[in-house]
Length: 132
Image 1 (cartoon, rainbow, N blue to C red):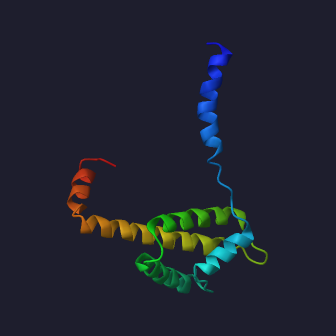
Image 2 (cartoon, rainbow, N blue to C red):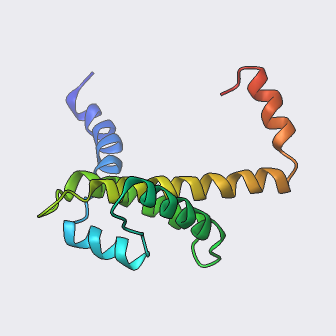
Image 3 (spheres, rainbow, N blue to C red):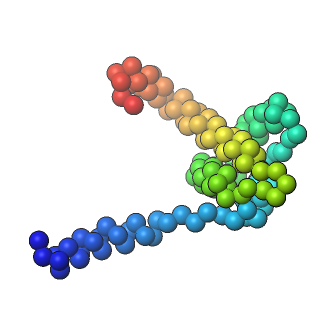
């Protein structure tokens, strides 16, 4: 194959992927967003788990936060785990727990959708058939 024939293929595959580069948020942006979203902080693991469960339930019902927004916040928090190492103590647990809360809220909304549209029996039937 001639090199000039490869150029259009190269452009076809390279240009779309370069537009999909995801930039990690700065530690300052991570902290500001988590605070703005009301992500709880706690001193003990037990207290934090309880607060995160309550937070997940609250955001699952929040009519102002769409499922796409839940997904976007979850993705950002996962990036924050990698970029924000903290000054005094690493806040990675804070982001990890918050990410779990957003995932739980999104899964809760999906389950509610499946129940409202009578899709649970279809889900179970397909799962039993090994469709995953």
